[in-house]
Amino acid sequence: MNTQNKSWQDRKSSSIPNGIGIMCDFYTERALNAEIWDVEGRRYIDFAAGIAVANTGHCHPKIVAAITEQLGRFTHTAFQVSPYSSYVELAEKINQSTPGQHKKKTAFFTTGAEAVENAVKIARAATGRTGVIAFSGAFHGRTFMGMALTGKVAPYKLGFGPFPGDVYHAPFPNALHGVSTQDSLDAIAALFKADIDPKRVAAIIVEPVQGEGGFNVAPFDFLKGLRALCDQHGILLIADEVQTGFARTGKMFAMEHSGVVPDLMTMAKSLAGGMPLSGVCGRAEIMDAPVPGALGGTYAGNPLALAAALAVQDIIASEKLVERANVTGKKLRNALEALKATTPEIADIRGLGAMIAMEFKHPDSGKPNPEFASQVQKKALKNGLILLTCGVYGNVIRFLFPLTIPDSVLDEGLAILADAVRA
Image (cartoon, rainbow, N blue to C red; front, top):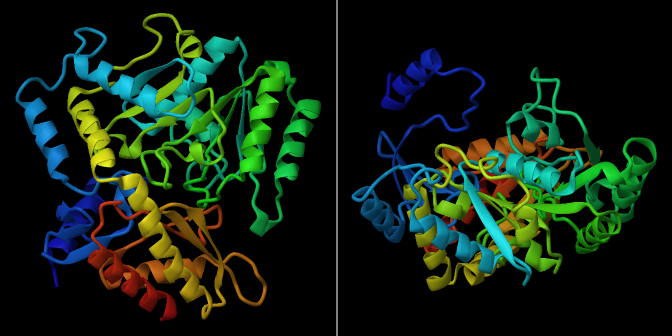
């Protein structure tokens, strides 16, 4: 039967390259808060939120109103040519809400990868050094520097090398897989002995909770160890909060859990509620290192996206989404723990706030079990629940429902999830 979804799939196959991987076999017609309807009218509960973009839900009325109002005034002038006040206003709010009491400055860009690229540029300009250290399992984007920093080959690096030089990787702590905080710090020390003089390292970049890598939470003593290491050697600490930011982890930013203050921070995804916007915030003297004209971009700090982002800031505060992340995250964790008690394939449940993941293993060998994760994902989708997998082995399901999700919809989604796991 040639349905509307099937028709669009056929047209997609003949017009869009294979390199753009697509999970769902349906085409979205509309979305509201934590629900999506396809072109044939079927409803889905969204536990993906556009890969952590819709923390404030789909089509939040305040965001729609803000974009609509800005649309009637102007859509683009290029901030570097004819500036506008919303850029300054949002920068002030970000400077105030990010960790640390020092003076900060913020620059806006378009994508998370672009924010990471510019954070590296700023770090190199500020230190006069070139080396960057990242971690196994990290994901920092699909640009060339982003791929170089990313600690996962398939599918992100396949066929695209060589990558920019002076990038080094150390293992990320992972208790489940036998890597301790000390192992990771010792590996960095080994890099300093064998591969790069610490005096040539501009920055260490770390996700406080790895996203694509499997929602691995950076131990707080590890982040404190990185801070001490950076202070010792004059290295800048970059926190990649592209996926963790804006209330997702039960704090405005995930670094707040550890009390560690980074020198630079990247952000994107839920910054603008679905509009393309990213940013780099950091110590003022570091952010001022690049010369005028060295930072920016034609669409960087687009006025429609800025209007949306200002609305997002208001929604997070007025609807208490930081607190909401902890409430919904606790409900999710309790549901997952109940499943774990009767499902030997569940190896681990981990995360912060409403950024939680469930990892699967083979019960006999204890090895990663990506097949089980894939089966759960497919069965849930068939029953109307959208889930995302992740992890270096693809054996992790991550949960990223909008923080505005109604309790009844969350409960419905958790029931579908339980059926998929038990099946």
